[in-house]
Length: 282
Image (cartoon, rainbow, N blue to C red; front, top):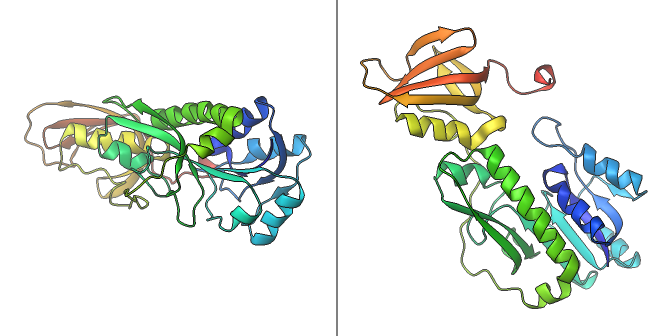
């Protein structure tokens, strides 16, 4: 089967899994990345090694017609931000890999919210493309449990592993999976998280503060300490009665900072006063 891939390194293993199963690529669609939170260098390098045409702009009707002329049978989308419509008259199959157990968690990036809500189960879904984001019939899905200490980075890895497994299934039997796809029905849409959701609250308990920090992991949460904001990616804590006002910087030793919360203390061990960027790489 000849296919086109639309995505970035976020789910680039889907591309590799399709290649490993013998599918023939005809084109890569990607997008510019900031190389801080989003990357596509691995995917672009792989496509260029295969001498594939690469397009960094949004897929338009003329591009879909071009895929038809190439004999493309499937458009596989994984980490592509633009809505793709009108593919039906050009390509037999078009699917998207979405990091949630649809119909729960439609939206641009639901992983943060899954941890903020303390969910015990999550999943990865392959669905047919429809004119609205994340609403198409479910072609394949894998679910998995979440631990009490789940972080953004562990959840992302679980999603990526599940995506590779689903890609192998899709590569092996897409026509049958497509025929047996089940409509989603009503679902929930989760918008992008706000800065307030990404900010650690010292007025809650230890576990609440740590959950916020885990929810963003290497993407980093915000925290206000001594009237300044810092970026936080690692912390631990303990419950202990005290008389400090929540948010008080109780102790500091080298890079370690201990902050009081309602029912104990949070020790911040991974933080920076600077936003992520080239100056912080390495």
